[in-house]
Image 1 (cartoon, rainbow, N blue to C red):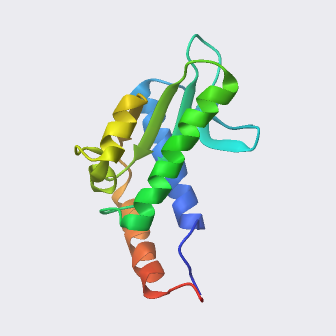
Image 2: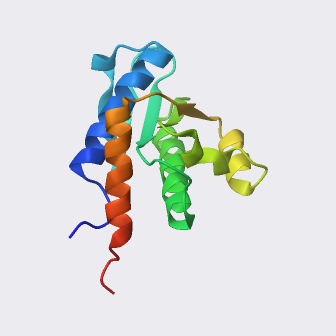
Length: 149
């Protein structure tokens, strides 16, 4: 049975999102790496230079449900903690491929205020339709199952 969580499809989509983001922000994709400091792992990191870039990716398509909003905010907090742990001011980016997934960050609610207060960039990038459709199909399957209690 499929349960919500990471899958090969979502991992591949995250890689495609990262490739698109690299183009948008003008960074060589080969320079983006996973990075961990004191157990805090980021989806992408570009060191060197004056201001490192810290990246979290979410492959979700469509509006975020309550628990998914919590996941997003956890990732946003990871960006802030990572910056603190590396003891350098960082460019912090939360990136998706569907603007609806982070629409709740655009409002006047606390989540929107939070990302603004901590200088979190929200980026939306394009991915191939084939990838987008595969994610949507996977999400439909995941929604059919519930975790056993």
